[in-house]
Length: 239
Ligand SMILES: [Zn+2]
Image (cartoon, rainbow, N blue to C red; front, side, top):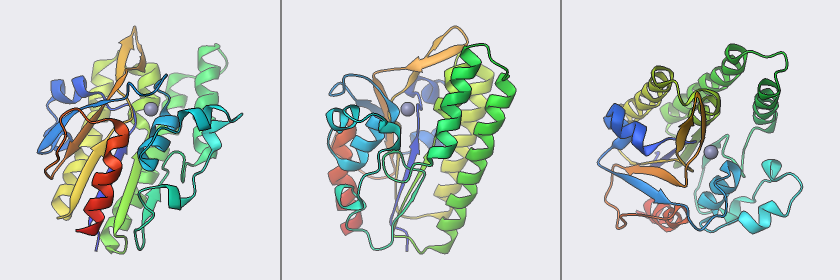
């Protein structure tokens, strides 16, 4: 039986979730996370630190390509799970081929090479659909005690379109529907977490220095650090 689900939503912005009023994303308890322990809000480093329960910034920035770094399970909150599933989790089961291409596409677009925003988006949405399907299929089986699914769409689309509110609303609505569907099917503990938020620079988007969290269960903290969730997630598996 699945006891614990973590929905990792990259770049999910507190101010947009609350402005749009997406209740399934906000759940019963929600707030901003504190990521001031990190020098820079870099996605893979933040997610790696989240699953390890401590900052991996020094260790990872020393590598030539931290995007591809993969942590052994023993260093993560999945260590004690019987049959965990981690879908596309950065620093652990991150799908390099997909995300390398996204970064290359962004670079090409910003350098004025031959790629449109529509082509860029299409590649991102196709991956989003795939992860969504895999996640709900896994949830249906009930085989995994812990599931973490990572959705990069809000960040990757946000980088080229955060200033276009209707487009971001559509993406946040899709993420809210994922949360709604989980709530309808699942009676365990649900954490929704982002690594950082985003703010608009014209039509583009950049990372803020705080993230978003929400739970359907009581938590002790008001303004948690991203690395504070580790113990809560271990405890949730023991109950
Ligand atoms: Zn990110």
